[in-house]
Length: 432
Ligand SMILES: Cc1ncc(COP(=O)(O)O)c(C=O)c1O
Image (cartoon, rainbow, N blue to C red):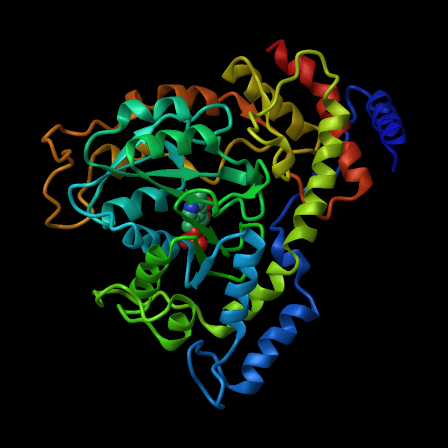
């Protein structure tokens, strides 16, 4: 549908809708992206593994080692533009692996956003380091302006999290990190395939991670990826994820290795998961394209509404637009909008899939992650403060945004309904 026709349709829909009659009788439902694209491709990958009886990635039946994980890693690195990609068992495991690769440990501090998924906190404390929270801005990602004054001589890394497809503003973050000689770790779990100024998120900092869990752009049930351009970080990641060793497959990539063995764990991916991940990776651009096309039409359909403002997107072109977040001046207006949208059968999502971590009870109370965890003190003996007082701005931002989730399979009329519902209720909500 051309833009003008589309706007005409949505305008007609909104005009035709009476105050009493909701835009939709049956509520619109969005669901997980990647699994909606499962087809013969994923089936074939799984059948290959079963028929060859080779579920383990490094060896099995036959002269040649199995190839699903290896192919996935090669294609993933090429797609993201990194020298190396390592597939692992889970996204959280990819974070632990990246922490180990960066040698984050006791005595170190890691700066992370106050609003993010709990694994970000967990991986830091489990490494033995101290999490230092920074506020988020209206992109819902870490505010670059809130980083520098939190840097101390103990700061080892900045953890940047790209939430729901929107890239954090990487240029100022990289400049601060380089100025202070600090590493940047990118959590791109929710944003595989998004870009920032033409570069894939997760490929810009020193090391990045991705997730293959069901709520992510592509899904293999569980799974994660660590990506980097640095051969030493890659070698440490490989060793950590595979009980400290470096197998011939990885030696072919990185040479004999520069490190002594060290204690690692087992976070290896298996061939069944890797096969599904490979098939999904080949569909990533299609999935993101389907979301992007629908999301753009929602933005276009409501952009002219007087006063409308959106979630901050540092690179609009690189963001598929998973959720069209609309900004309100007060939480009451936002609550009213959510209520009205629900009544129209077009639910508006609030910023979810993450938590305001300093206010999570076990974090606020500083519950030790290990029985022998000594204190929540910086290496200089200063007690860390957690709790709502350190993330007031983030809390205020997050209460003022809501918007429709975009499903990659929404029909033209679903999109028209979203536009019609927002056009119908937006100004009334702003008066709340
Ligand atoms: C921002 C973020 N980081 C990390 C993870 C961890 O990924 P996984 O669920 O694969 O362990 C998630 C998953 O929900 C996430 O949303």
